[in-house]
Length: 601
Image 1: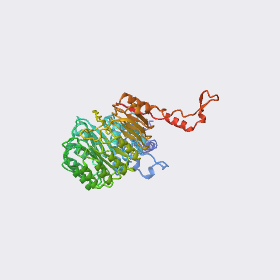
Image 2: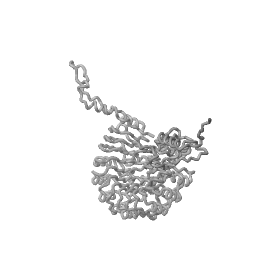
Image 3: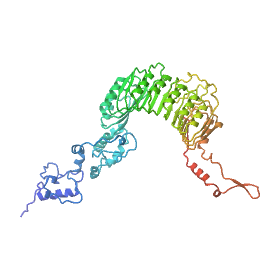
Image 4: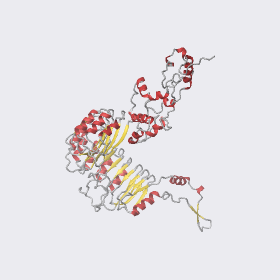
């Protein structure tokens, strides 16, 4: 007698319920080819078992203290995370500016503490990754792969996205999390390359481009279309690239980007003139300006402006009119930097008439017509300056005296490079009368008039064309004793013969091209000195510098007293236990001192 056996493809309701309960209890393993409801092979199979979630409440398993996992296969849940997350919850609000993520900025980045969205699609440490094991290929979890890929440059990150599906999904989430991007555009790249990269970053707010190809309005239009929430943009170029952006194109870009707060651009030779209308712009840097017909700023929130003009003598820009307009339309300016050969005393008077009450940093560079009278006008109008840069001016020691009388408790940075009418006496007086001074630059001030060699320290103009009333510029002595000075620059001071420094906080000293400084007349007492620049100095001077800054025990002579023996025949050293403890402490601190670097090249 044959017993009836159920066919393999027929499942009784009791068996289906048992299989479903077993799946709910243990969960389905990844990589299975069986049905997630009845457990039979999926190929050629049409499942008639209903989803347990749609069954009546009495058919569900008994409730427990811990919720049971979902019966949807984990692989399907991982693949459909994008559509599920976008359909079930609204997009998360944008985080404040102070917590912006910097995924591609090569800085330290913590996924858990950097404000990652709660959406499973954006966070590498989500619960779904824990449920499925987080394996995205190669045995790496999603969080580990995130940490690896976020350290790659953009080009390598695009290549890594082609490895497998898990890497591609992680790379896509990483691109979407980017809010700061620094990108180098090679000479052979087209505008479409920049657009393809920027379109991967819908939340980008800070962009820095290093261009090795010409830039024009097409690049600006690409940036404006791909970055709707852009807040900061910086464009720098190589020496061979040309910036063809005009003033009207720049004005339209600034007017359209209502979130833009910071704009920095190099090579602005072809602007011609512009009108900037922006209520959000707070920082503006433009370099290589030339012959501007007009420059209008309608930016009431502008706080920092830097205008660097080209060093061409035929520049016809009217700086007086520009400065007057700044006073009317930008009342909140705090930092002003203008570098131009056309700076004069009239420009300084226009600036003082603007009455910018919040001005804290003033830099007027390469203005040979700025004199001691200009210093008096600045001192009478802006007595709260913390930084004053008059490099390339014609001020003298009398102007330094006025600076010291007005800013004794405010000024912390003073830059007076390329000022041939200043002597070592004026520099020494400034360091003695400004107790809060932390940075001082006196490069090319104490010069030998017979020295024809000019050191290369950035953009240096011809200073020999300016008459110097002082002919006794050789063999000068400089003594600097300051408790808070941290950086001192004396580059190109070929008229300096002797130098004595006693600055306990000084960590950077520039003595480049001080070729007349005598090694026997050099004394450096700066215990925290980290670097000394000595390019262009004599070999004997370099050796003297190295012996003084790197000899850790030179200033710790044997302070232990000697006593004569009983018969008076010899002197013996007092035991260490009977000496003062402070000498031992000083010696211990000196052994932990960081060695100083003497930079010659």
